[in-house]
Image 1: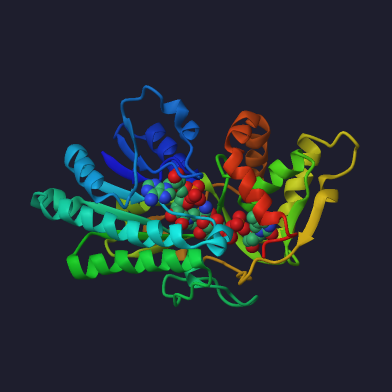
Image 2: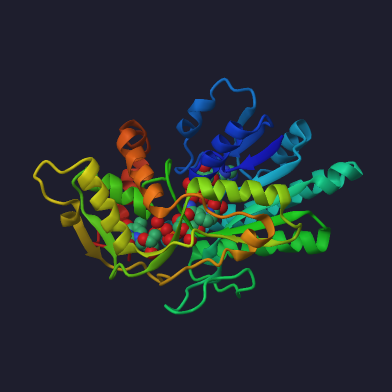
Length: 356
Ligand code: NAD
Ligand code: DAU
């Protein structure tokens, strides 16, 4: 079986669901169930013996040792992280604890397990670390997209913690020979996305009649990838990626934030129009910018295409339509994740009129 961490979060849960839809091979899923982890994301797997869920921390060395010895996985896929940039600005402690110290402890535990495997299992073993394009920092408007050779220039506490984790993974390969793979992906969107991130926040706020808070001028550019395409890229890298290599994953889909918000509003106007006949665009509000806000990310995904034949299958038009339709069809999921803790975060983050 494979051992997934953070598999109750947005991308991890999509990955586990896609994996078990396509494979008989089981998944051990270790997730701490922070505010971002949600077992409802996995409820369709209730009673499926191929899925073993364990609530726990990637920093818990004793637990890791027990789980690795019991389940003897052939691969690790490490999604577990604190993932929201704005939260890392408010407080970075959890980001250092999980993204840096947690990754270190996971690497050490896995190294202990891997080094005792028989030769054939040892050679076939993989540790895949899921990372982000944010480690490369911000691009000028006309600069070429990030290749795997781009210098690391993280600008937020979140991206600095992910950069640190990437360096640890690299070092465990170069120093200890651990067979690692790293993927650096652009912005994902799709079902199960926690509504603190741009696209799901805009959908749920629009439907609730609330302001749609656009940071600064809204001209910051991100490269958007539908989540199932990211999951497919990870499966492909796990299957055939060259040990020790990094693969950038992106959607060839650069868009300014304001244009994303307009698209979401237009789709909602079509699929769930406002009772007063006005467009949801009327709810757009420009608020204070995010401190240290990176202006542009863009991924050059030619290496993964050239070496592994991966390209995104979903266009932005089809992916964003599916996403909006998914949120409209799942009001219960939205209500469940909007717990007291969620409400506290939203009021702290936006109370002063912005992200500052
Ligand atoms: P998420 O915040 O939705 O989910 C993170 C999951 O990790 C949650 O289920 C949480 O409970 C779990 N977790 C947190 N700390 C843990 C710990 N100490 N031990 C075990 N589990 C823990 O994040 P996501 O958007 O699904 O991102 C998953 C991974 O992909 C992260 O590593 C992130 O850096 C990376 N990534 C995300 C994006 C994106 O656009 N969302 C893009 C590129 C890379
Ligand atoms: O690039 C990959 C990264 O994408 C991942 O590593 C992160 O885990 C993930 O959260 C995401 O980071 P971003 O900061 O790009 O995503 P977010 O959805 O928070 O913001 C997207 C853009 O929208 C960004 O420029 C900030 C802006 N924004 C965001 C929010 C929440 C707003 O204008 N208003 C908002 O309310």
